[in-house]
Length: 459
Image (cartoon, rainbow, N blue to C red; front, side):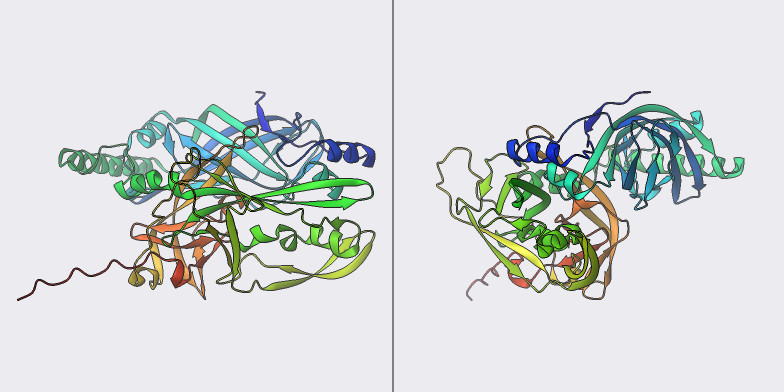
């Protein structure tokens, strides 16, 4: 089954070809498109575990490449089983694909907690019919050379393939476990119907706090697009890095510290600059804020906002190869407690069409909630961008989190499209995502100010 590739990467071996592209293309140009991956097929969904509290599924995939390539990680995004949204943890593992050879990928695991269900019908149908409709996208990070990355204007090349397939479900459990799960689903269904009758929610809908959050997110989430240019020989190579940002309760937009200088967090790019193999062009850095909702992009160069770094990023000393030699470089660490960037928006004319309107920001959690050691329900957002229009959108991921040292540890690993997302509990925001499984708490001054107490009536 051939599947449409929405964002694809092509390797280029000749320096001249890369230089020619760099001179004619800028950061706003869409990625180079070609059929690097020929065929992605879901072989089956394996029902690995069932008890009275959860179902654990393993998704088995086969992938055929049109050319030999190495995937550095991959994940299934916007994933739905029989129309039910689910989250599959990404796999951070190298996968070597040979041209024309079908390769079995390591399984991706999905855990569905019965307590989180708003309808049991998709799961019941899957277990009873031993078949499921799976829809979503597979996104994979691709290993490319420095020349290829520069030609494509990105530090993090990736490919994305759409999925839409009816898949057999293999039951790796006993008949008793299967019967037990169906019985549990029956009881859950009775509870859902009772709650619906009481007017609390309709089966199939998300909890009210998540629906409210998704509505508020439209005015308070941004794609933060950081760009800079590297000069090499007679060519100029713009490089773009994109993360999420959000308007905190204070009104300021918060994102990762990496947005201020992305090359400092990438060993290959930093090594290239420090070795002299490429030169960071003076005054080439730009930051764009693209609203997820309505509004035109805001630019740092237009003085639409200012950037202030908080905290001090920690350093990792690495041995890197750049420009034909070896050397030690100090790469900044994303997961540095309290390290983040604050973008203070300048006042905009109230009547100006198309500008980002003032918003209250995402509500902050109370001090008591922030002080907890664990949070059973949190939401983070995953950034999606249209490859051509650059219009951003987000999808919602539900998981748990716990306190770890001075930071926040997510129960499930996420990919780079989640970096910069707020970490939100039913009570409000507690921090932001910094890397695959780490978050930072927000400084007190970025939290929403406490409401003034209502004065007591005079006696």
